[in-house]
Image (tube, rainbow, N blue to C red):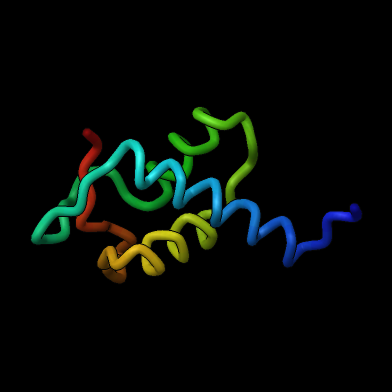
Amino acid sequence: MIMNERTTLTHEIILCKLWIENYTRKLQNIKRGISTYGYKHKVEHAYGYYIHESSFKQACIDLGFKVNKNNYINMNMI
């Protein structure tokens, strides 16, 4: 199978969703601290696979998280 850009981004979003569901919890309010950029590095470290920040943000939105204009999110690691 040839991986094109769309397939790659879909794969990244799936990995991000898997990581989010297993290692984080949703908070009531957006928390300043680790941004989506910081969290995407945690996903990369967990799976050994490059992740675009936009893929991580899309996974968050798909799972009902809130992301503000500074890329902070209502998420905390468990």
